[in-house]
Length: 331
Image (tube, rainbow, N blue to C red; front, side, top):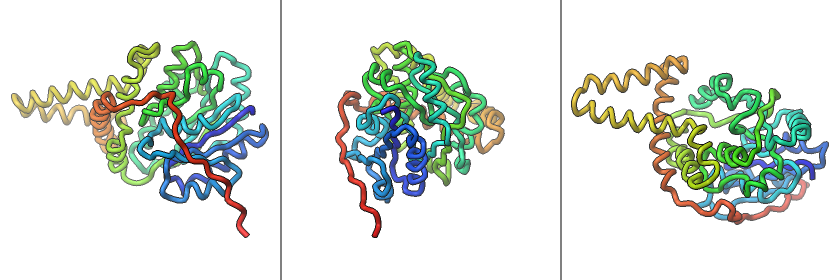
């Protein structure tokens, strides 16, 4: 099989049909397969998928739920020359798979190809910041990149060379971890100047989303990636390239300075709060987004500590799953 597409999802009933239909259209010229890897949805996500000509598997143990586990669950059930992974709140843009396969065929040294992510929901502060950062952050621009955030098409041979697609222990930054492992083996990743996916992320209050990311473990991803790299060839790449680690160190130093200032000089303590918020507000273009960024950096530092000490299982251990058959057509 030339191309297989995996879609990882959790409670995406409102968006999963669009994701699956976009994937089916993309693989149709190649006779490819589409698979939904569900992490234990409590809504109608699985039932919607079972009405379409796709494979459906679900994580058997919900306690193993994580971003990395969802991606690895999709990968372990598919076999093709190329593997594409997207989230259940995304829809593939027509033409991206064709452009990616053509690029990969022409560049055998490239392990994976991504495209441009189009953010369609800018209600939450996180996605406003992400959309504004696309032109500024190097890994979001066309050319060689150090990760493929937002999904991509990967050469299956390269993935097998590094042992597994996604570390099942990771609650975020799974794309960065995969990229670091691939890069340490001499592979490269490229983002092409072609629209890849439309992303319709979480709506609602950004602080509520931030709290969810903190309590669910997603904010600990940077610490988990760092711990997973201890003693591995990609450790140096993780330390150099994962900017969230440096942000966490800066915040930890800020905490220490703030405690000392509160003890000795309250006026300095006030400045230590006002100045970084003002700077982030100027950088983000609004005080509200600056304040949100400041809260997110603090949550990241808290999460990193938890991620460093979170229990791990071997990332090559297969995930137990349940397969669903397709529902018969309605009478």
